[in-house]
Length: 545
Figure (tube, rainbow, N blue to C red):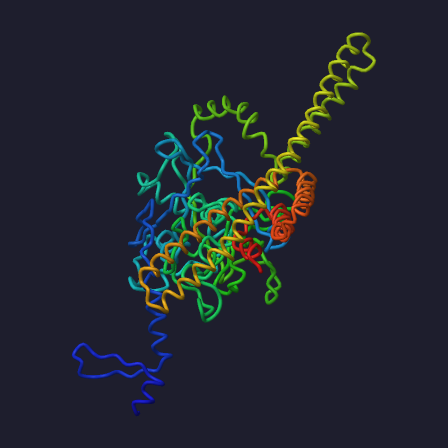
């Protein structure tokens, strides 16, 4: 083989003694590198918060998932499940999630989740405790256990709890004296909260389909195709973990939960159980934190003509560590004492029917509820003589107060809408000018300085570019805030505010802002519908020429 062909078709390695050369085809080298990838983590994994030894040299690592909503007895994090990309099966729905164990300082609540999916090695170590480990280097032991039923997973978890209580009780956290932790499958809310990055990421990043850069997804998740899994299941924990240190949440194998499937998450008809996430046969574009599917507990087998337990090659599970809410009587007494205050404050806005509605809708529901009770009282006191007429007059005063409150609120809504539309307009203009004027200017100046070899100016222009990019990022955060505020207001008030702003800008002949205003209105309308921030798209829309 001549030198030209060697360069074209082969790679070569020098041996340690440098006495020989090994020729290999690129395909063989690629295979070697891919094998190394499967056995070598891409980065140092985040340390586990809990590490529990298991039989046969196995262990179970757990990450602490803190809610970030305070340490009160009823503290919970309100967030939105689902994503419009998933259609009606993932329709945006607001929920409130609480933790299981208080932090040491009592300022937060947390639960624990398995760092990885349960592996074949972990599964066998618990269910085959009396058998020796067959092969210490068996690669299948690091694969996620799969092709098992929901009931098999439950059986394993039961045996896991019993073994840990008998052998590793001290390794478990507990809530008061009687609240030792126990393992179970996660709920949908727990799973998606953790998949999105929980309290470890910003609000905008939490709203994103994936909690890491979209351009680097191959470093975090296994999906279908030659750029990732090659359509084969892969060992757990090889790729990078998400911001909470959880590996393979969105790919490799989908994961069972303990939640029963409903189209609208927690209301409507109840079907099978919910499986979350994608797997090694999932297309890259379908990876997202909201991905969910209904899995039957039993399915029809065409070959045998019988119903059999459902198990899938693409489905496994991971565990969470939780505990009971009332571990002892004193906790129940404290919660009972705090209940009324909770219901009057933070608990007053949690009903599912108004969970993602604007503030005016939530308040309107409260007024409507009050109206129902008032009408009941009016019927009760009608025809009761003088005493009844006196009560009816008092009720009329209450109705008048409610009507006046509605009018005052409507005026406040209109004023707030006008203010937030003005702020959004100014933020949008700033983002546009920083990008199209300042950033473009300094990029051009930097290119000229680089051509001329003027190193002092090169450094200066790089600093200026960083400052402009920082300003744009700050402007987008402020713009995101205006979107969140606008959707809290009555839609008619917001539409009126945009119309009035347009009229004002036309009089001032502010052509650039007139160009931006319908874009801002579209952003507000989309955010109201989807309940999702989209800063990258917003910037792209606002900076179009």
